[in-house]
Image (cartoon, rainbow, N blue to C red; front, side, top):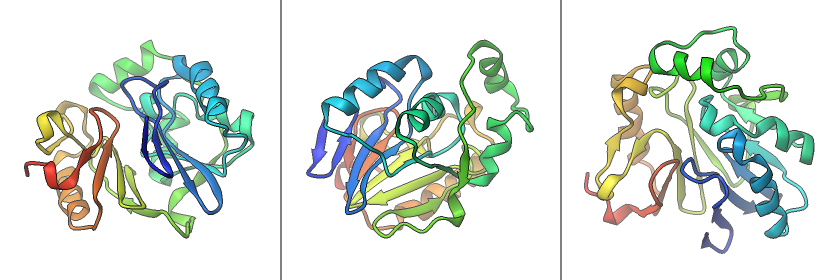
Length: 204
């Protein structure tokens, strides 16, 4: 789905959205969906005429966001950026608890990608926000008036709510991150779950 001249919400990743943006440097992909959608994701990118990716930007380490990072890095030879606080979870050096620990045991994901620390990067047209709470290194991105919010919050019926408490590392910190993010200028919110929404349509 084309949202603007240089912004797309990809259909192939189904419920956990991946977004494609085109900057003056080329195409960047934000999140990669579940691993099972990998072939369809590559096919959709090819159909959009994407011959190369400048980078992959990951909001956080959950498997519905990193599922195809390794596949796409092999396909396009591009760097994969994620906050360094997330790397230990991806590489198994830090164990998750609760529901997420159960998910880890049931769903296997290729985590062989070479990761680059997001906080050491400097992107000319993409603003990076560190928004911990859902996970320790959760990050959001703003480009051309669009906020790509990952799992910072959800928007059922356009009511802004934090992501579900049982899925969070620190919900109080998440709510603080949400407030700081909403103080930034942007026109659209693009969450991982639920369709994009205009900022002025959101009930706070």
